[in-house]
Amino acid sequence: MKDDAGGNLNRARFQAICQSLRPDLVRFAFWLSRDQALAEDVVQETMLRAWKARDSLKDETAAKPWFLTIVRREYARSFERKRLVTVDVDELIAKEEPMLAASQDQELAELRAALFKLPEEYREPLVLQVLMGYSTAEIAAELNLSSAAVLTRLFRGRKQLRALCGEDTSLDPE
Amino acid sequence: MINCAEYRRAVLADPRDADAELARHRESCAECSAYTERLLRFEGKLARAMRVSPRDAVAPGGAAFGGAGPADAVVIPLRPRRQRVPRRWLAMAASVLLGLGIAGGLWLAAPHTSLAAAVVAHMAGEPQAWARTNLPVPAPELDFVLRNTHMRLRPDAGIVSYAQSCAFRGYRVPHLVVQTGMGPVTVMVLVHESVSKPAPFDEEGYRGVILPVSGHGSLAVLAKDQSGDLASVEKIAAQVRAAIEWTG
Image 1 (cartoon, rainbow over the protein chains, first blue to last red):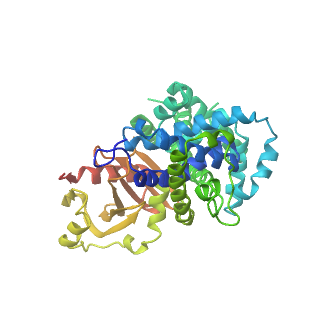
Image 2 (cartoon, chains in turn green, blue; image 1 turned 180 degrees about the horizontal axis):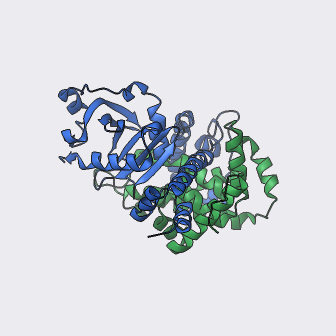
Image 3 (tube, one colour; image 1 turned 90 degrees about the horizontal axis):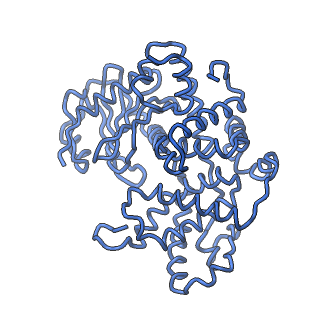
């Protein structure tokens, strides 16, 4: 990536980009991993890798998807390294309870717990859409899926989530 | 023409889909319109639920590289392979992350949110802007607010009754209120924020849409929810966008 003067991205600009993107990247990694410590670890590793590979970012406006792709890869790497085992969702919720209930809003806490229970194949596209503001095409490109597959996952994910939250789903299509 | 089941399937996949056929169905079907309103309220809650606040006192640079972080900072141990990284690279990365750690305090004090949520949050700070009035902002004042945006608003947009240059996500942006047929409508000119497609939202008592503006970032247009439905806001937003003349 080039800075305004046409040179390589300088440290100050890189820091500014990291600073602006880091909150959403940590949130994304958190919803991906359902583990706050791991999410922070993944994003830290992401920043290091991004700095090292900064020359491959040709367009600063594409920084967000660029970083996000690194987060996903880094999460996959950490998963392989640590050989994480499947754990009970209720245990995960209990472990992250302080963060999930941080808003002291019961409704939000229940919604967060429901998100924890959502299968990853539905949770990830939903987080990309709602939190990261990705379009269907952008999600499809990031997850290497067709747009139709993404729409199906989003439909099923949102439907399951609404049911888990006790929303009126009587008018939802099958 | 799509039916109700097809419409609901589509909006459950993407409640903010601005497809024209979906909009037509929504306008012609009261039940689906009410369904969408409920779904958008759920979306607002979902977006807030996803914006968890990462824990306080995280100092990634200081802690990880042996700096003096806060006492309760999270220490993320370096993996052994990191120690094989050349010293020059380590120093540079430490510097970067130290900066991030310091900036982290500022960030934690004001967490970043989605663009729509940030726009809505900004509204709370200037309630006086929403007054219904026929008094326009003096032209020099409006010109001053728009001076860095390379745009001007044609009179057919409506009376501009409020114009301020506001701090928003690290930039100064024009915050205008235009008096329209459905009452006061807020317009924020976000030349530094790009969106790929129109993004309607219904959050915290505000309905609005963020519109992409080719080459000029985006435009956030919103009204208080009692002013009208989403379709009306979208119509006003399109009119406002059409009334903008870009000069640079």
